[in-house]
Length: 152
Image (tube, rainbow, N blue to C red):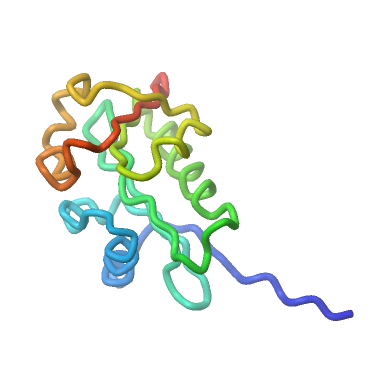
């Protein structure tokens, strides 16, 4: 009995040529595009034979970071790709010595605690993060704020 080959998938740093595909992915997931261009060098992408199927980024405001733009193509969901992208981003944040990661979400507040994130008051966000487009209006005030201390 023949088995179907496993799809090839590579997690790597985003390249300038990936930006349009990442923006389409984020738009399909209804995630904000504000700030993407300014922080595109911080994106990780999941590249498969059909193109970019996942993305995630950390905006750095040392010693803190803002996890943003975690998105997986609809055809690739429920396969663990989102968790893999988050794990890679967290490893990178730890390697870079960030003290904590914050995120804002309107749809995944129950998903991120599996990585150690916990709810926090938006008012408790470090002042340095307020430079992010996400905190300056790209993310609605109703978004849940989560934090993950990294000890960096």
